Image (cartoon, rainbow, N blue to C red; front, side, top):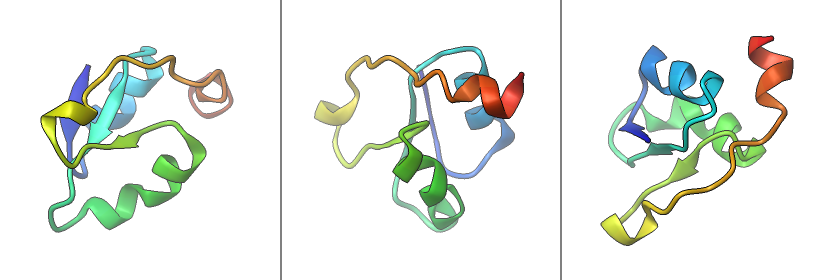
Length: 63
């Protein structure tokens, strides 16, 4: 699992099939397209940090 804002480590985590969460601090806006696609999820509280299956669409992005 990875938690962050706007970092290449978020995309690396998703490429490895790990649940990836974005917190709403300045810069998170850059990840909203990936949140909308289901690649990442927003985490507003610790209760949002639950495992999920990373979509297979990650293969389209990362190969």
